[in-house]
Amino acid sequence: MNIYIVVSLIAFCLSITCGFIFIPRILNFCKNRNLYDIPDSRKVHKRAIPRLGGVSFLPSMLAATIVALFVWSYAYNGKKIQISPWTIFFAVGLAVIYTTGLIDDIFGVKAKKKFIIQIFVSCLLPISWLFINNLYGFMGIYELPFWVGVPLTVFILVFIMNAINLIDGIDGLSASLSFIALGGFFYCFFVEKMWIYAILIAGLMGVLVPFLYYNIFGKQEKNRKIFMGDSGSLTLGYILGVLLVKFCMDNPNVMAYRKGSIFLSVTLLIIPIFDVCRVVIVRMLHGYGIFHPDKNHIHHKFMRAGLTQHQALIAILAFAIAFIILNTVLFNWLNFTVTILIDIAIFTLFNLLVLNPFIKRNNKQPFQED
Image (cartoon, rainbow, N blue to C red):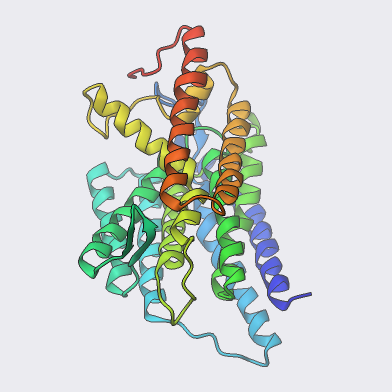
């Protein structure tokens, strides 16, 4: 068996183990200190639930990755692992955003301050000379100058962090969509023989397994249910954003030119991306600010259409997988721009012709303020 597959499996399994060790202890910590996510009019859950599940993500990923890399190094007779300057900036950004999420979960952080911190950690990538410098033909655009690529990179990172955070509205949704996207990125980096990234991704995917177990199947009355909180959603969003930028940057010294880089990356995150775009457009059409809170995200709409939380989760995951399969097929026949326009049309028509009629049948308005 390929040594890199073995090392990736080691990272994955170790991370699963770490998650099952950390999460019960986090649950007890939350119970002893009364750290709960309290229900309100915009939330689906009806009971107070611990919300520090995401605290387990970073330490589990790092522990599993470090051990796996030592195994890899040993297998290659002590091969040294080189750390690039951008990796240091990434590590700093990850530590900052993880800490911000943790502080927000425990004490609360104002949205404006959190937004500024998101911009700061996003700026660290271009500073390390990692930014999107090619759109690979989207809208007829190829190479991007530095002054365009840098703000675009910052925008994309902030956007993805918020998209993953905002779609974290029902049990398992944000973590499951992230797991699917991470699986896609794992394949991409593995094929490109960028082993360290593949191992890191495997380490992050592993801890999502025990989290999903406690998040979806855990019983609150037995103190076995937990939410990821901002420490989890911001960490996931930041890592996914960094992986997207890394995979999409056109750098022949690292990877050969890949015409489908941005197309594939967008496809892997298509549901969170499209959902945020739709919600923002609907808010603007109804005269609300783009940050106005409501219950109009895709998971809210599925539930207002009559589905339970778990049914909505399965339906949305199936929707995401269907988009990935469709785009994989269309990529061989159509260009990037046309395929994305088809995706937008499908997503829009599904909302207008499928979800909205069911919502109206249940005497719910397609847009509601809470």
